[in-house]
Image 1 (cartoon, rainbow, N blue to C red):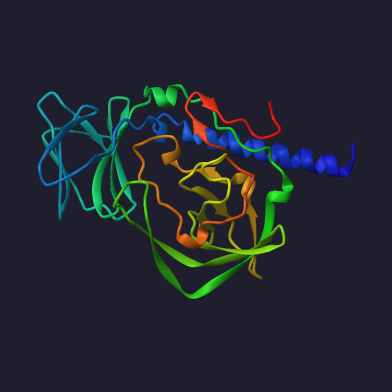
Image 2: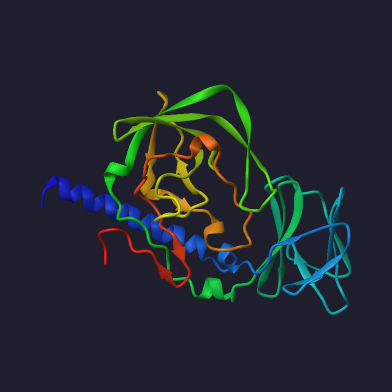
Length: 278
C-alpha cells in the first residue's frame, strides 16, 4: 500500500465517521425526521391533532390553553391551564414535552410556529441513511476568506412561498475550481468564527437536492485561508420533510459548475446511487 493509498483511506474513514454522526443527528428521536406538522399561529386559538392545547400568538408571544386532561412539561415542570411563552427571537425556539413527544415553539420569517416532534413518525422510523458521492480529497478545496468592512444583512428566500430569512454575512470566500475563479457569500456559522455557506450548483436537481445544500466551514486561519470540503455538503431538512422552512441560497451562491461531492437527493426508502457505485 502506498502513502497515497494510506492518505485516501484515512480521508475516507474520517468522512465516514463524520457522516455517521450527521445521520445520527438527523434521525434523533426529536430531530427533523420526527416532525409531524408545521403550524402557523395567529391571534385565533387553534387546536392541532399532533399537539395538546389551543395555540395562539400575538405581539407579546405565544399562548397555549390546555384542557383539564392535558399537560405539558415546561422546563421539566408540569403545566396545566394557560401558559404564556415570552416573545421568541427570529430563528430561535423553545421546546416543551408532551409524553414522548417534543413540541417546538419557534419563530421563522417573522411568524410564530408550532412543530410537534414524535419519535414514532414513519419518516424517522423508516430512515435508513443518506447516499452521497464517494469522498474524494480533490473536493476539499483551499480558499481565501475576505471579510467585509462591516457585516451585511442578507435577505434570502425560503422553500415556503412568501417567507424570507435574514442572515448576517461577515464576508465571502474566494476559491478556484477546475481553473475557474469562484466566490461564495458566507454567513456566520454555529461555532464562534466559523462560517456557513448555502449554495446550489450544476448538479442541483439532477443528482443533488434542487433547492439548496449547506456547507459548514471552520474558522479562517490568520491569513484568511479556509478549507471548503464539499464532501461534507449536506442536504437541508427540507430535503426530507415538508415541515421545514429552509432558506434558499443568495443569487450569487448559485454556481454554474458541478460540485460532484457531498450528499445526494434523498428519495424516502430509496436513494439515488452515487455515480460509479453499485
